[in-house]
Image (cartoon, rainbow, N blue to C red):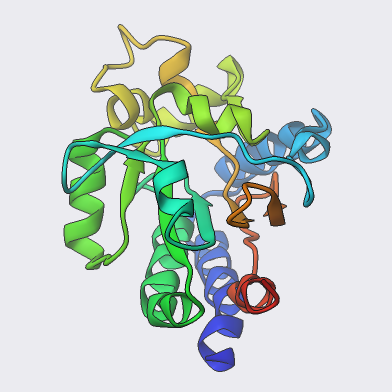
Length: 228
């Protein structure tokens, strides 16, 4: 278990190294500035902390196309929630694949796992099929639930052109819209984040970063679950 869980940041660092080799310096500079600007908003200070009550939610499940209610999930066991940006993000799919491999460990600890993103059900379905994910993927339009957990933000106007330049159409991924008719809400994303929720609805573990290249280590999440 530990060897798999501890490998996540190494895998993400490898993606970063490859990106720095392949992407033009001027584009890298835009991405670096966007990350620094996001950090400087103080968003990491707004993330719900351990001990806080977790917001309840009912979000549409990709497989069943029916709302999945957090209270129903918590009636079955502790809940691990992974907020991810979308299938277009190689860091996110690497993290999801790591949790795919660790999912049996989560279940052995009596817990459930769900992944939440603002992308449409269609894109969630592509994500499940392409990466063979066994856990539910829930669609969070406009990052509404992510906002309640303190991890949502709107991509600033000056950074939207960067995503266009690397052919990532976030409004389409999130809401089926084009750049020309995109709404502000369609440019909303969550910080990549992991929360562990106790069955009494309080948060036992919470971790998120403004730098999308850094993710909560699964081994720490599993350790938090083991203490419940």
